[in-house]
Image (cartoon, rainbow, N blue to C red; front, side, top):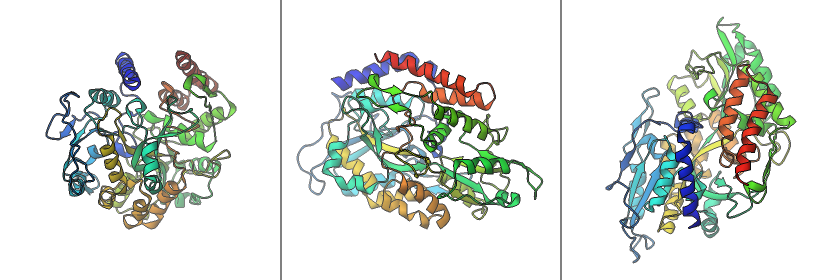
Length: 497
């Protein structure tokens, strides 16, 4: 009952605040940018039923053993956004790049081979208010797996016990959907709430021609620093000595998601702001400090070398093309960027690099490039959690599924599968991605870390976006920005007491 009450409370709270926060956080971005795509598309349901039956009406899972299926039979229901939504059941072809992707029926057919007595029902939903939709679905008791659900801790089943029984699963992946929950463990500890199926490492795309025209040395993921980023961005802003065109040194993650620039920069500066307690109420958030000020001022200075179209989100309109005018571009969709580059026949014009390494602290020397992910979680109201776990394992371990992920131009979390990227893109592109994937700690996610946590602190992510954009436009200094964020953090934390 504890979980049911918590979920109900969250939904009631969301109903009161939905008008205030609608559209925040993900800012209508495409899935390739580690944010949802097709936000306004209608929900799609690829199942024999509506997926909205009540718990009492849901079919019972057969308990008698089915030959060759490990004893599993019945119906497994998946619900949520992402991963399957992008390709649909039958696949699609990108009109810009011409890239064709196979649909998720490949996964369904493979599952039928292994578990012929278990029917999959997959209901994909748009990203508009997806968390509220998933919470409502969980309350119905008629969902087994929440697609991309690990961020909604109250409705997800912790996976610690499952991973203890199947340790090979954890060993096979390069990232886990780790979160914090004081009902289970102190907030200083991470708890696995889902399995990461694919990853989206934040990468730097460098226009080698612009660098050559300005006589600049190309960056090296192993050696370049935050100071190097700033100096190169400054040096490449101006009139191109060869083409005579205006160029800009920096293309940051878009202004609508400026908080994501804060994630990598705060990591790079090792700005640890949390003193975790046993619960949120006993956790201290030390946001106002000299390092935070340094991070905010660094990003504001970097924005001086961005295109004037940055605030409107139009600066990357010609990115990865022959007409590109940005020397350095930070992207959350490395594979999408590469496909655009390849489609234009410009693989020699560009290169990938990781963001500079973290300066000091527990993760000293590790790249500050963070990773987003597509994950799956077991719904904690499901009556067939063991079967749901079998499907999660299948998604990160099965060879056919891993090949499907590669064929959809995704980066599998499975380390063996992601090592095959060199078969899909030139080695220098693949090597930069592998450098990030293989050197990041298992718990090193974009959502929960010691520099930034978007799950537990109210409007923190949106507040960061607000103040950074105000600073970029010269309307706010670092002290005022810190005061703004701190007030909202303090107000939120006070409600916990």
